[in-house]
Length: 313
Image (cartoon, rainbow, N blue to C red):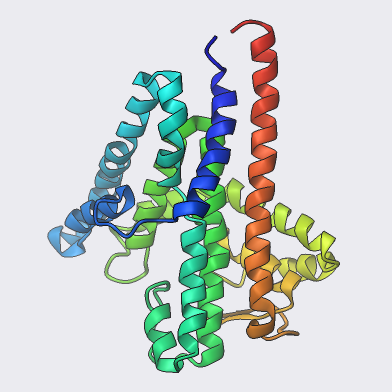
């Protein structure tokens, strides 16, 4: 008997997390997301288009990019026998989220600071878009841990959430939309061509960001810091531009007792502890939220599969 699709999805989600922890993200130009980034780089230069047409070009080429990246995942889902799907799908889903890699990049910044501030600046430049030339040690740590916290939603919970709802196609579309925003969604010369990618990424992450906050609050309840996380989230959640990243960062800052700061833009949290002290707790909270969501999603998918089996579908 062919297992229900929701039961297969639960197994695939669990196996994909195991694959991620074992192999992370191989550094290859042929990685699907690397190929996606190369394709966006081919057309995502504002100078290619008249100013008046940049928004239209951004919308049309956004749609083409999402379609081309998602199509192989759709075809595999439709055409592969269930046993092949079960073997290969965890690796395809793994391409759409980054858990171990997110940790590795952040810890590389922390490690680089041991060699000096300038080395830390060079390493954190790979993670954030801000000018790193004059960042202090604390600001470098903040940028690194901010990236981890924001990407807890963008790079982990969001793709797993959309996979839970729409399978590999949902995860792939999420990864494509997030990558488009990461490359084009800035208030510089890319603002017009990146307007639509930025808006759609905000919409896509609206529910996952709030799931992330809920799970963080549950986690910090077990650590005895729920009230701090809740208060800082209410107070500082809108200090950061956008309506998703700020609430997650504020909940994380409050629960761990640290302060995130982007010089001249925002300060989030009270800074009762330094980032050297609180940084490991951010890492632990990121792991806890990932596992909490995965366990919840797998349980729901298995429970949905049980009645389908019972009625013989």
